[in-house]
Amino acid sequence: MTSSKPNILIVDDEQFLAKGISVVINKKLSCNELVAVDGEQAWEMLQNEDVDIVISDWNMPKKNGAELLRDMKANPRTRHIPFLMLSGRNDVDSIKSAETSGAVDYIVKPFNGDELVKKIKQLLGCR
Image (tube, rainbow, N blue to C red):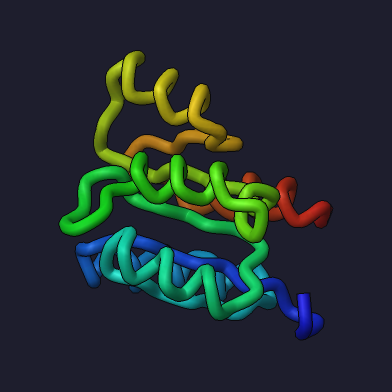
């Protein structure tokens, strides 16, 4: 990490949701948010930015969240970055699939802002 503030990459094709996540995070944490509209753009950003946490939707065009997670875990540069799946998919198979692929946690939309911030703080080692 090059700055004192952690970099959180938010990946969601629905702009208002990405903005909502950013607002929730900004109210409680001091961090830099990077936003990507799909997994493909997120992957490009991960090649050029130092990212501390990825928060990603599952259903997106071009490259979905599951594909992004798989690519991240297969790459030495990105495999260490905690990946939090934030999705409307609430079935057990999707949750298990994300966790098996390497997601550190899975939050079902609509999400609770305090729960999201708590999980981010845990991942960053904050109290």
